[in-house]
Image 1 (tube, chains in turn orange, yellow):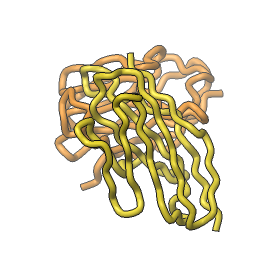
Image 2 (tube, rainbow over the protein chains, first blue to last red):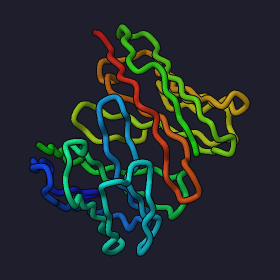
Image 3 (tube, rainbow over the protein chains, first blue to last red):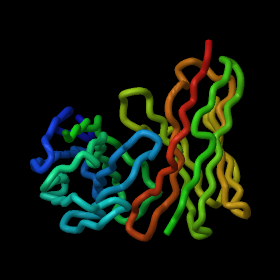
Length: 115
Length: 112
């Protein structure tokens, strides 16, 4: 099992460019999450999906869109990148649906720089 | 919504000493409190968690205590080792849809 995988590992964008971060899990998990991690700010939830076909906003959804393509894949799209979106992005998954009391398994992260 | 505060933001201890990290939460209905460890350049990983029906849980050198009345929970690491150096995050349920709210993290440095 690869667990949770993310692509790309690193990305540099210019302001205004768009891109999609890809995430996939092979653990047959129901819930998937996208977080951003900034120095001193911890892990902040952008969007999550409690099950295939559903998505919900987290703490910091502005400037992002998501797609739960199927049970395995959950993508994060930046339509018009801004320097404030420079961050490390983590995808995570959990076996439960709509229940936070299960371990979240994180991907290796994507380091995004917007110039 | 839920608010999680974590202290201290940085902690430096000598190898062999104990380390304690504290978190407070705001939602009295919260019933699950995990701790995640993130080594430098790595992904966060769950190291221990506690549910609201118990007051303490231990796993070798780490333990978590919960005080529901005061709405705080703590991570205790005994006999610290250099490999314990990492950022530790506490978390609490954020709502009805299965998400967690994370604290801002504590950077623990264990000096040999």
